[in-house]
Length: 64
Image (cartoon, rainbow, N blue to C red; front, side, top):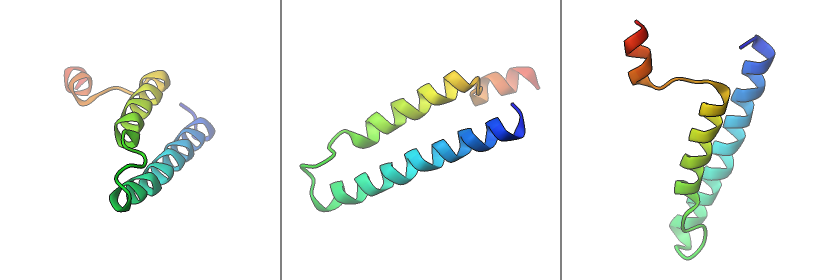
């Protein structure tokens, strides 16, 4: 992954986490709103990581 691709990917993740954080704050105050937003965010982030070719820790340990 070159620098530009890495920067774009990281900024996209930052955006997702920022929106997710705001939804979590709203949910903390108003529990009927954004009930599944954190779970949905986790699934979305996992998919983005897989699509980008990022490896999990278990795979990294096998390589090292």
